[in-house]
Every structure is written in structure tokens, then in C-alpha cells.
Image (cartoon, rainbow, N blue to C red):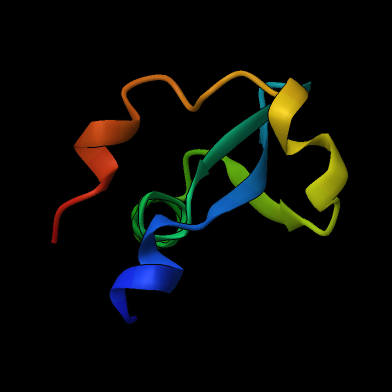
Length: 69
């Protein structure tokens, strides 16, 4: 993933214990979180195609923890 794509924000939807949480996160953090969830099966994560709403969404909590390899 090039640097421009990695820092681009995406809409991330997390389904956990019957609840839905919507967040904005960098593409890199979203990719790493999806990989983590896929390996542990602790929640369902979706990327939502709604770029107009990104400025209204809260940031993914602890997003910086998902920005590394």
C-alpha cells in the first residue's frame, strides 16, 4: 500500500455483540484491524462506501495501535 493510500480515511463499521459501531480510520489501520479480526474472529468488520460522512464519524479508538505492521 503506498503512503497516499495508507493515510486516506475510510469508513469502518464494526459489529460486536449485537451492536454496530461506525468509525473513521486510516486505510492502513482499517486493513490491519480487519486482518486481526479475521485471525481471531472476535467481531465483524465492514468497509462502508460513504466518503461524504467521514468528517462526522468519530475516530477509531486506539487507531494508532493498528497503524503498524
